[in-house]
Amino acid sequence: MILEIATIDVIPGQEEGYVNAFNQAKEIIAKKKGYISHELQRCIEDSSRFLVMIQWETLEDHTVGFRESPEFKEWRALIGPFFNSPPDVKHYELV
Image 1 (cartoon, one colour):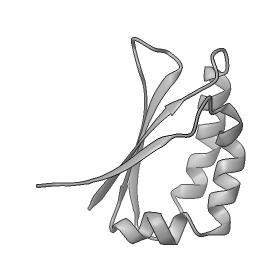
Image 2: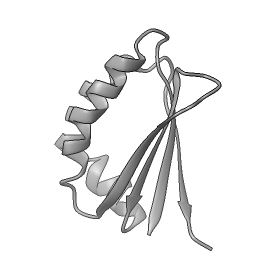
Image 3: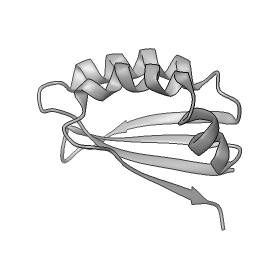
Image 4: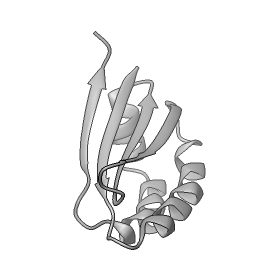
C-alpha cells in the first residue's frame, strides 16, 4: 500500500469552496483502479492549509493510472482553481 500525502494551500477566503469542490472530486478518484481510501484534513493553525491523504494499492496506480488519465484533468479542474500555490505531493510506504 502507498500513501499519497498532498499539502494544499488554498486561496484565503476560498476554503469552503475548496471543501465543496473536493467533495465532488472525491467521486472521481474513488472509481480509479488501485484506490483504497482517502481523507481530507484541515490545519488548525492555518485554516487555508489542507492535507489530502489517499491510499493506493501501488505507486503506479497514482502516478500512471490516475495522473495520466482523463479523470485527472476532471479532478484538477474542480479543485485546482482554489490552489494558492502548487500542491506538495509525496508518497509514503509502511516500514
